[in-house]
Each structure stands twice: as C-alpha cells, then as structure tokens.
Amino acid sequence: MKYLNKLKAAVINEDIEKLKELIKEEISFSSIDEAKEINFYIKMAVNILEKEKEKLSSEMQKIKKLQKFNFENKKDLFNFKI
Image (cartoon, rainbow, N blue to C red; front, side):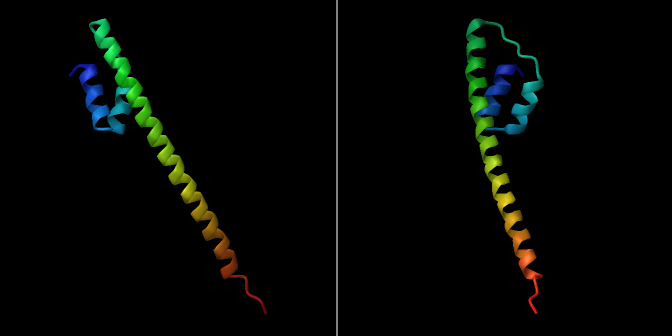
C-alpha cells in the first residue's frame, strides 16, 4: 500500500499506533500533488497526536492528584491521638 493511502487511513481512523508506525517509514511520492496531499495529512496527524498528548497529560495530572490525595488520607488514617 502506498504511503499516502496508509497515512490517510490512519488519520481518518485516528489510529495512533498506525501513525507511530508511519513515522518510521520513508515517505515516498510520485508527484508534487501527492507530496502536497501527504503534507496535508501529516499536519492532520500532528494535530491528532497533539490532542492525544494533551489527553494523556490531563489523565496523568488526575492520577497525580489522586495519588497525593490517597497519600494524605493514609497519613491521617494512622495518625492516632491519645
């Protein structure tokens, strides 16, 4: 399958794993128009990956907050007052 077709499919399906694979492949094209189209889809792929990065960053922040909350509550749980 041509690089452009694989890239289109990955972008349309927002297939992060396929996009990661395509990053490693050598880009090949046979015309200026095909190169322009590849460039367009690469820009779309970058946007998809940036959204995924933001989503993962947000999830990591939530996990960190939960860990901090859990740690603070554990300290209070065993803080016996006599």
